[in-house]
Image (cartoon, rainbow, N blue to C red; front, side, top):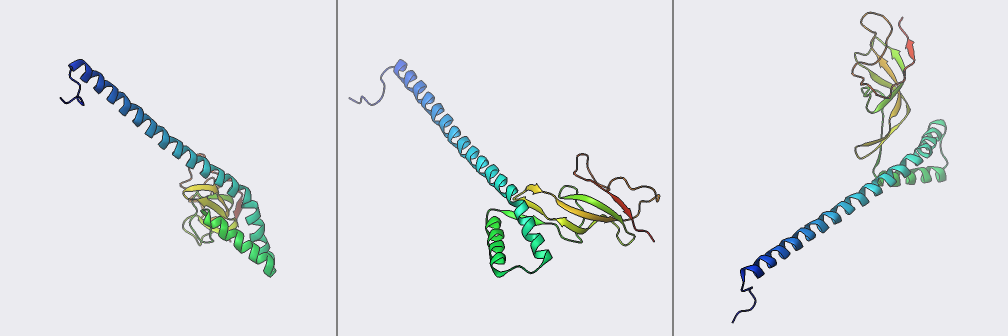
Length: 176
């Protein structure tokens, strides 16, 4: 006689209910584990971004020292290791002279009117911008050259600038 299977319909129904309950609990637990894993990764990313953001003034000081004078071999070695290690954590710098102005990546500090350009262009990088993955840690602070305004009037905001874009402009007109 086979006793591995329930004999009555009532026992079968109870077994099916308990099996369904167990499957639901297992699915909930699996979802909980996945959510905890995602939360841990998010906390780790935020912590890394906060540390990297706190080190940006150090990178600015290193870059300023490189522009001012030749660095001693020891200081150059420390600066190179710092930049390499921060790069291994995903820190990427951006902002080059001549690249098109993008209000989502650049903070325009000064605007210069120039008939030599046909669109807003970064002409001087005052401080580099930094990203981690697709997240912006700091916008590049730049001087922007743009074409004269069509009516020759006062220039107010860059074409394509969106509301809330981080733009502060001091107008310098260098027309001849």
